[in-house]
Image (cartoon, rainbow, N blue to C red; front, side):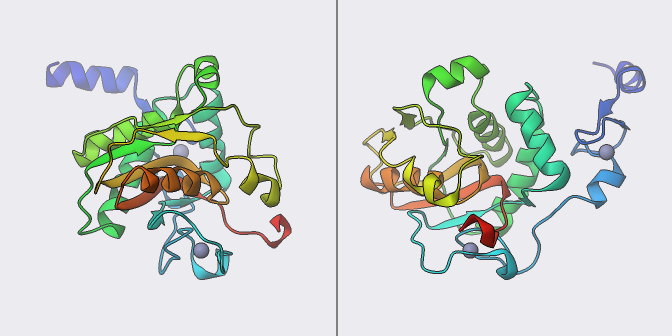
Length: 234
Ligand SMILES: [Zn+2]
Ligand SMILES: [Zn+2]
C-alpha cells in the first residue's frame, strides 16, 4: 500500500482505542492518550509468584509449580472490561495490543532467560469450538511474533471445568487438578507459559506442574493481568 493510500485509510477508517473506541492516529499500542494514562499498570517492586506489589500479594506459604510470573496490568477497571470483550465478544484483535505490553514485561522481568518456546493454557476442545478461538493461543501467537520465540501447543485440557471467575478461592484451587495433559518430550526445555488472567494462580500452577513432569527445567509465566489479592476471597 502506498503512503497516500495509507493516509486516506487512516483518516477514513482510523484505528480505534480498544478501551473507549475513540480514533487513534499515532499510537503503536491502540490506546488514546487519556485511556493510556489511566491504565492500571503494575509498577515497582513485585512478588515473583503473583506479579503484584507487596500490598496486593497474598501468596504467603502457597506453593506454585512455576518459577516466576509477570503481568503488565492489574485485573481491574477498563483492562477488566476489555479482557471480557476479548474473551466473550469476539475482540480477537485485542491480542496484539495486550501482547505488546506483555512483551515489554517479559523483556524487563525475564531479562537473561532463554526460552525454547512459548505455549498457552489450553481450553477444552468443545469450549474452544463454541467460542471459535482460545484467547490464550491468540496471545501466545502474538507474543511469539513480537519476541521471535517459537509458539508450540503442548498442553491439552482433557476435561471441561466450570468457569473459574465466579468461584471462591478454595473451590478454584481444586477444580483444575488433573485436567491437563502435556506432550512428554520437553526434557531440559525452558518454557514461557501464557494465560489471559492470573486469579489464584491454580491454573498456571497446574499447567506448570505438568510441564515439569514432562521434563521442562524452567517455567516462567506471563498474563495480560493479575488479580489483586482480596481478603474476602479467603
Ligand atoms: Zn481511549
Ligand atoms: Zn505474591
